[in-house]
Length: 328
Image (cartoon, rainbow, N blue to C red; front, side, top):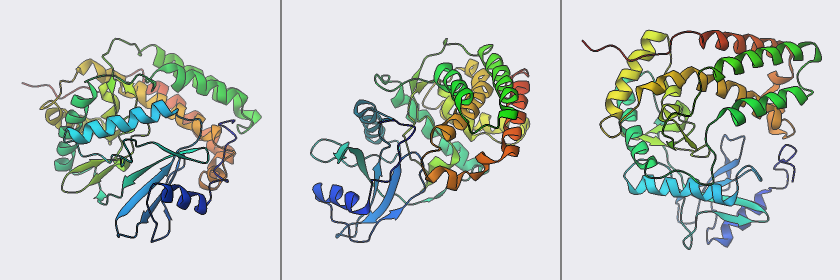
């Protein structure tokens, strides 16, 4: 199956209900779709009025071994007291299949949105990220990949070169901006860090608040530098981000040590995410959900803005990296 051309058009409500019924779950409430583009996710209530979420994985994105590693990591975190949404176990397995689809069932967990401007909440998140990484350091993923320039920069560059979505009048300019950004990242990126298992996509939208943080969606869990799970929580100007970083790391280091040399990766990782995200949208454009939810990708001005963003990030990469507030 061609991953680029795959859509979820064959995944019907009856298919989902049958898959759940095979596991002894009878849906009583109907299926409420939740916001997810890469996979397909629904919330429901069973006949005992228990609330669950069922997640159907996009075929050929992750192998069964890779998904099972994600699930095992979530269960390890849960056992270590880290608040995380972990899959339900059925007959000693969490990864289920039906009509060629992999799927998993999770308890439905409610909560408020994490408030990134709330410094008390930021401290709690830092503390639990330290605990999350404490578990993550026990071993590395074997089947799941690590964060690196090949997947996040070089392969996306190839996607840009071959897509017809980029206006021909702007493609050369965009590729030149991408090349400049790649050169800037390559000048700073290295593998002299100790990789660990990460959440991988730890932004404010993947943290709920229930008398403390609850981490959700480990779908992008990978091996990589610890700072990957920190930098997306920082926002504002340099002074604000430095203060946030001070708060996060002081709490974080109650449970895990942090190599401050990794702070130099913050802007390279941001650049890698920018490039990878745009390539991801292009790869998924044949899925009907994407043109509907990302219509700007078909607009010429959006590509001009992308060029400006890449060039600005290349400029930022020439600046000194963010540092902790000096202690006197």
